[in-house]
Image (cartoon, rainbow, N blue to C red; front, side):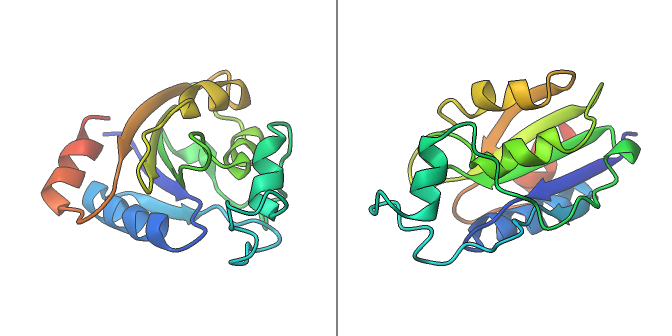
Length: 157
């Protein structure tokens, strides 16, 4: 049986709720991916072209700094990585996270939350950040999360 980790970034709490439910269902450890500087509501205003999130997402090379690098990735076989969908991809802090550790030989299963879109080009944009890992598009986890469905999802990996 593989050892699993649910690592997630959540700007508003929605992805955090999905991550906690997934970790509980999968019997996985949990780790929050936190930016060194937390996002404010103004930072997340996607309607403002000058908001922090808008500026970051326009520059795909931008890498927000992490508050810590304490995830013990080496002990896990499967890492579920969760995030809200921003501009049809993962926020660039997910690239920062993937580039901060050695994921060689690991299975990374993506999960996301979204106000209405799917994964878009998230997998394609994340693969260069962990080139020696297997990155799998998992599921968009929105709405009411049923434990049995989450367990079935986690058990596939």
